[in-house]
Image (cartoon, rainbow, N blue to C red; front, side):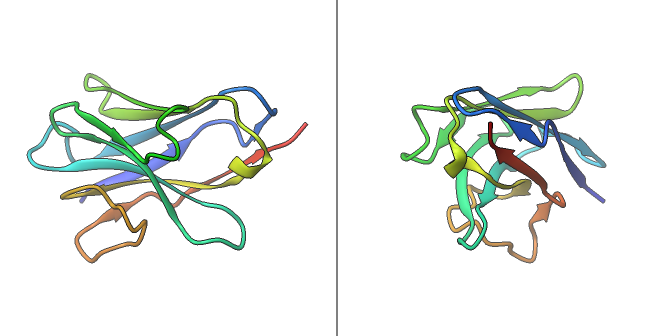
Length: 125
């Protein structure tokens, strides 16, 4: 079965770049027709879809984050990454990576989706 795991620093200072990695096992990130998303959930708020990279390497982003977010992949290592620049305390959240057959616009899990367990990222000085 497919497993995803997020990793990266748990603390980031304001104005710096948040960088996370999603390592995938049990399946290839190039397999048709899967989409690989980043979702986050700030404390006390609902989940927010951030962006996605497709099986072919195309990227799409939430309009609210498009100017700051960048998703990349390394097919040789079967992983994809998230970079979020110019972070503020409002970017504090649990960050998830997930696989689905399309962007997870709602940020909500579906039966056929696979999610990582999430990683807490706190933006603070």
